[in-house]
Amino acid sequence: MNPATSDGRVSFELRVGVTGHREVDDGSRVEQEIGDALDRIQLAVGAPPTTEIVLVAVSALAEGADRLVANAILDRGGRLEVALPMSAAAYERDFKTKKSRDEFRELCSRATTVIENARVDSRDQGYERSGKYVVERADALIAIWDGESSRGAGGTAAIVEHARTRGRRMHWIHVHPAMGKTTVEGEIANEEFTSFWRYNDEEVTPAQLATAVSYQRGQFAAAASGHEASLGLVQLEDWVLPYFARADVLAARLQRRYARANVSIYALAAGATLVGALHRVRPDWLTFLVSLEMAILLVVAAFVVVGRKTRLHNRWLSYRFLAERFRSALFLALSGLGDRQEGGFDRVLSESADDAWVRRAFASVWNVRPQMKPHPPRRLPELRAFLAGAWIASQATYHRDAAARAHRISHRFERLPLALFVVSFLLVGLQLVDKGDETGFRRFIAVASLTLPAIAAALNGIAEQREFQRHGDRYERMAQYLERARDDMYNAPDLQAVQALAIDAETIMGQETQDWFGVMRFHDFKLA
Image (cartoon, rainbow, N blue to C red):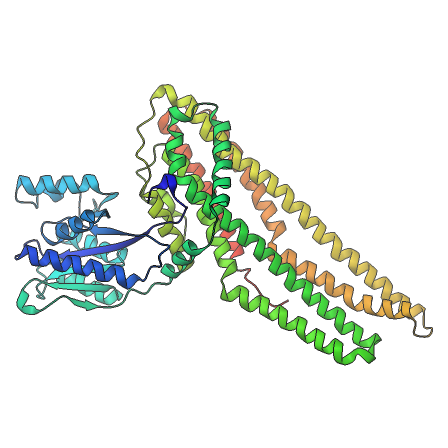
């Protein structure tokens, strides 16, 4: 998928790990079975037509099996992640020929990620750690194995056993044809896949996407002050803005739906109390009023059930989190921090299923980022000004405005229930003073004195669900942190300082988003 013309849907990186022997006879047969295994793994995932599958080899790039699978996936247009058991220089000593070492270096140069396990006490320990990382990272494993016991701690048999213990899907390609065809163990079943498919299935019209992208380009153009070309900004915009715009549009849409549904739940609950109060003053309408009250309560329950079943609350939070990470991705890449694994996103989230698919989606986009040339010293003022203004200052302003808005709404929600309480108290007092005959006015007082406390309770419930006061305080603190970071960025003396400050700013923003996520994830739909 060309990011410049993308509809913002994220390709799914299907990670295939490999373990196996360094010497593989009958290479053509094994290569054919590798191809068949990749087809079966891809089919087992069950991705819908809206999601493009990109195969990713997760390999230590040892001779033999590791490279056969890596090359097979690269030949299909996939990507490569390398997990070395030790430093590259030390690892190369295990390869017997110059041709093998050259092949290893060439494959490493094509990888999106190369991780060196530099701190190991022995080579066996390094192989064991690397093999276990491959299993943990992969969605499925291809094992090219003779079925015999390992010769060391990190041998093929040990890694196969670890994969079985972890319940990974494994395609065992038998080294010796007499052992039979490829054996398949385990299933690919992961909750995060379903969330990924749903995100790509959400409808965003081309007009909505174009409007959001155009708006963001305008914001960046104003901040860049004519330096877009020299900064390489257009290339980065073409890459990430469709993804950001899609996530942003969906998050805003679901936030509106969540807010409206929550208000409806509390408003209907208060309405049910009003209808219940009418029983007292219009007993002749009892059958109708009871039926109406029951209907209202059923609608309230339906809102809760449908909201939870469609995961509206979780989807909103996840899409907003993803949008904010896409926003930061452009600035991290512009800063020259493209070598950070998954954009540093792996340091932000926990390991719940709701988080895992977001991390995977972000990594899929981060791994196709444009490769930026280092900024020359003469471009430092432009880079510094753009990062400080378009990114950090923009977020500081947003948090200032959001804090003021949240505090304003919080104060309103505090005053309204108090006012309703006072009115209810006075109405109850009127009933004690005025003990005359039942009149329309007395009936109104009776209904109001019963209903107004319910309305006040509904307002309190809405305020508690939306956490206006807590968010206002947090936004205000964030604005202060970001304003200091903005000033530091404007004064950064060199590119290394700019990059360090960019990492600090991204960490601050990521932590704030995570804190917000942590607070709001416990505010799913509930009965009022």
